[in-house]
Length: 114
Image (spheres, one colour):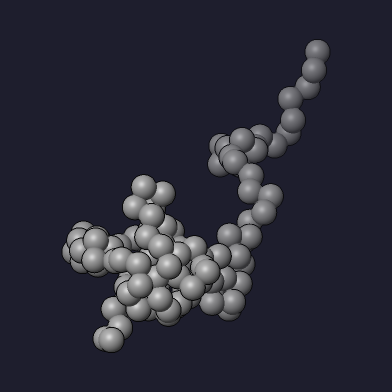
């Protein structure tokens, strides 16, 4: 007959055997620190008021207008200024001095006074 171990394992120690294991513990925190160091940000979600204001500005865009556009790309914000070459409302992009900017990436639009 098999003998029982002298010391029984506590219930909490037994439970640890079956708990989930994170082989890369601390990785997410390290990545977040690195993003902050590099100045990389997650794409912000605009509030309802900001979306309404942005949609009004998008409706005013037309070829030949001079604007500055703040947009999100590759983990950081960029600002491009220039003359609008094209506004494609079906494909949802603006062509600004050879640069193609998606409506979804735009954070703000400033119209320059002519």
